[in-house]
Length: 155
Image 1 (cartoon, rainbow, N blue to C red):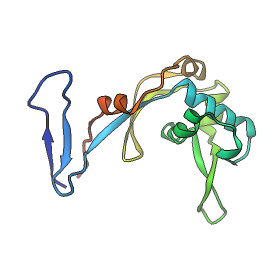
Image 2: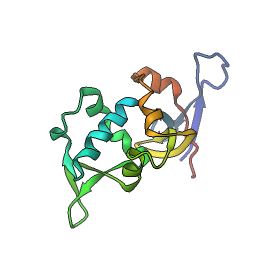
Image 3: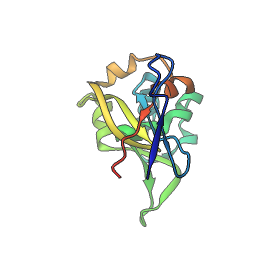
């Protein structure tokens, strides 16, 4: 895959480097996500159930619902599976890491970068569940775009 970089020639704070695939024109950017009180609230609701459950039954707020899947970036949740290994639509469960985090036995990195829905790296200090519950600010689409950085491809 060949890429081109635009915006690097300008050094203004408002302009960031954007990497573009020369073949298909797709942006090759990683996006930051921070563990927040809203994410932790949804995680705690799922952990309280103890079993895989469809999110529709969890009484999530709109923000919890829209952002719930981000918990997978920290390996705190996974989609529930059938015996044949296929996903059960809409059902999630807490991982062992998630259970330990909710119980306050481990910390996780505060921030994760993703590329096309997959975690690529974790950065920053690790935080406990109490620390994550203190982070009240929700990011908007513009915030994620402003924090995006070029993805470094292995190919």
